[in-house]
Image (cartoon, rainbow over all chains, first blue to last red; front, top):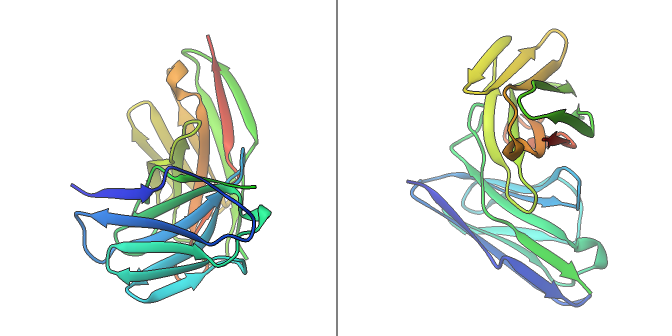
Amino acid sequence: SQTIHQWPATLVQPVGSPLSLECTVEGTSNPNLYWYRQAAGRGLQLLFYSVGIGQISSEVPQNLSASRPQDRQFILSSKKLLLSDSGFYLCAWSTGTGSNQPQHFGDGTRLSIL
Amino acid sequence: GQSLEQPSEVTAVEGAIVQINCTYQTSGFYGLSWYQQHDGGAPTFLSYNALDGLEETGRFSSFLSRSDSYGYLLLQELQMKDSASYFCAAPGDNYGQNFVFGPGTRLSVLP
């Protein structure tokens, strides 16, 4: 069966520090991968998605970047965190494109910027 | 652009039926999905509609009307554990590769 791992579960970082969040998927090949951010009590905002190794699409201009060095690995990074980067970060995967493909989410990372 | 709208909150009692509506505006349309998210947890997939009509999955059903750009999630025989946020979602403008979520509806089930 397929599983998605996302770590760490919680993270507290000072303003201006770097960030690296990692997400890996097991049990499937060539998944579509997604990074979302969710503010408290709000909906999910798509940050990045990838349909293949090295292919990254950004939905919104921001202080973050994403990379997909391997088929089932998706990394979210920042060189210098801002206060506005606080939130709940969720990684997800789906089998190919198309709305009939449900997205499967990791447990998320709660990021607090001090 | 693309946007989805949902009511922010709905309250109902155990055993009741509740309907959560979603209206959308998209340049292209590839179907409507629904997700459930409990407090502190990750969203989980509930249902999907590509064509008009009702899709039933146990106590949950989802309806779509493409001509009205409208869909809803119907929850029957409500249980306390159904208290959660519910999101409608649709693939985005980039040939369905990206994804857009609605703002979410917080459902509170009262005893």
